[in-house]
Image (cartoon, rainbow, N blue to C red):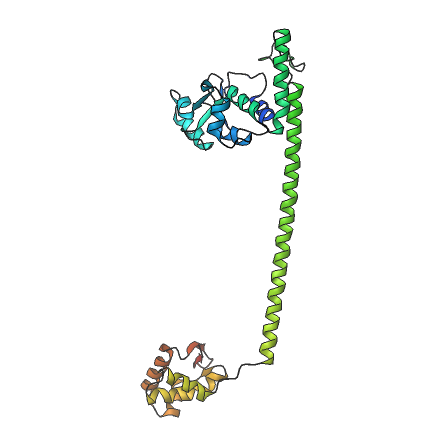
Length: 298
């Protein structure tokens, strides 16, 4: 099963014909014999039918509808499977041939179908009066070059022009709406930024008017004791020595200096500092030029 048949030439391009008839582009499959089949649900939906199954029962002859699985029998190949998947088609889908599609158009009340229905009526009337109906050969075709080409009926051409113009207007309206939406989103973003900046200014103003009270060394030590972070006299002695500098911003002392001030051994001072760091009382940010560690509050 193929999307199109290279050995078959339609008198009127099938895509133009269907577009003029339904006002929409339809998914289709074309058999190797050149017979076109369309997804029944697509046709019914675009023609305004609420129930595809009921529409087929009321308007389409049984021999004008088949399942995609029936059409695929005998010609089902890996390439066919790939094409079906590419068009999001399932083998259980109902399909209608061109006669079934025209029958659904004739039963539709969609305004876009009226020019095509008028042309069909003209064709029937012409056949009734003259016994035949034929398309005008295209004057642009060179004689004896390829299959014959025909002039598209004026009613069909006019319908296609009107539909294309409608689509162009719809595209223009969609583009305008998208531009308006984009500008609205930009304006909302600018407004949000402005609000965020205003809130930040208010916060800064309030912080300036109501500055947070500074923490004293005594309060810092009391907090550590309450949380059981300073639990021995040695650790408390080291903490008390570091606290005044910590509340001012940072403490930078060599272990030897702390040992001298507290009367503790170097090893004990080292253990106390490691405990304060481990318990989160302070953290080390680096070392000063003289090699002394720099400690700050977390």
